Length: 384
Image 1 (cartoon, helix red, strand yellow):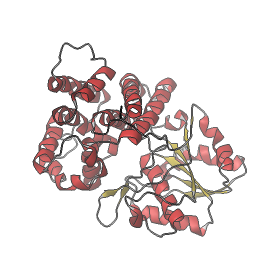
Image 2: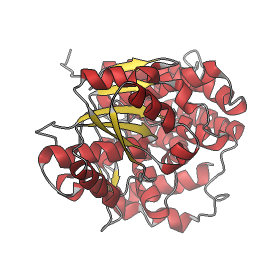
Image 3: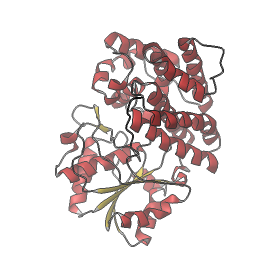
């Protein structure tokens, strides 16, 4: 048997009401002057304020940075680092979706490395970790609260870059997801499914990632429709928060694949929500993986979907069944297709040249050249 490595990257406090422990955990990490890194909308909707109140009640000095935006723009990361220095911050508490948490990671990198701009640290492993970071996710999707990667939209090139910074503590409280509307709940939930399926079907086998990936698939298939249909269902919110977190574990062990390359390149150009791009690409990703990857990986996904006793033994045909399940799920969730969202096949094909620069692309099965990339993108467009 080969040797494998896995790492959960940071301790995780999980459960309904866990955010009430934020001040306690911040103090354990030595924080006194805390920057709350969040989005302005989460202040308006009284989501991030729940955490701010806990920190203040715990005796911590709080400085609010609510400039975070979708796609984690590099210039906002740089602004955040300046804010930290101006206010002599000794710890960051990030409250938000994946882009907010990624922004906080980027700020941590800049401060720890002593630089001024995140552009200097793309694709670089951290060698100093001076800024403590606690992450609290307000969506059940990216798993960014426990992962080491930050996905940053570069101001100059528009491309998405991936510097590395590990959170010191993740706090996953489903209560923080309660106000998320149906559309974002559906899209972020599809990101969970994409993480889990891509982790299993890319070329990086890791038994740890596969265990989490399969359980994440099961949880998402059962609970995502409930969470979208009944936004106030506390059990569904908790199960999806768990699925998102272990989906983050799966990609931490195995990485993502060509489906994320589509989402990240198309999203960078057209500013499409990440989970939506992942959803559109997932049926084609499964078919692509069945064609170029290992048959046993598709069988693992089929097993997680309850198809292990299927009479269909041809892996390519089995991948079609899996793709049908995914597209039916998207219809149930009310997710619009690429066409319905106003994009053409040419819009999609235009990002083909950007795939090779995307970090997830190297994990894709086979050795896809431009012809395979364009065929994949065409399948993405035609799948749903």
